[in-house]
Image (cartoon, rainbow, N blue to C red; front, top):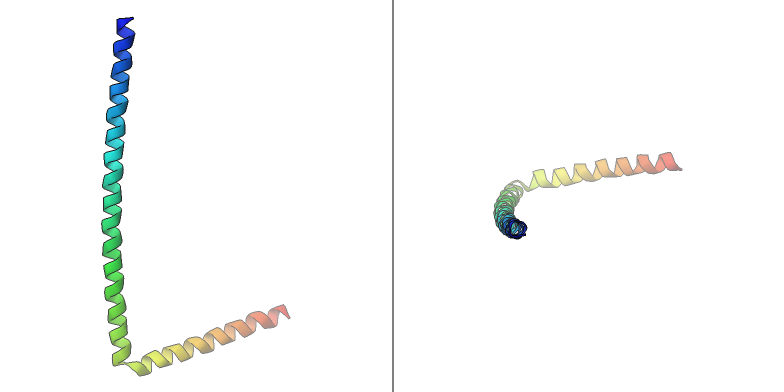
Length: 85
């Protein structure tokens, strides 16, 4: 009888320890993900600023790209709608 109670206590202790280990690992993963999120956010901001500076320095390329994209989108839309009708 005593043997089964001590085994039960050992199992409870093992489960508590495993739960703590899992909670610690979960917290570690959340911190890691948060750190990666911040890195990606900063990288995107840097790239956005770089693109903005480039467009300000070369407005004709930006306007040309927008114009060409608009023409391409218009052609694609007209082709899609002409096939349906």
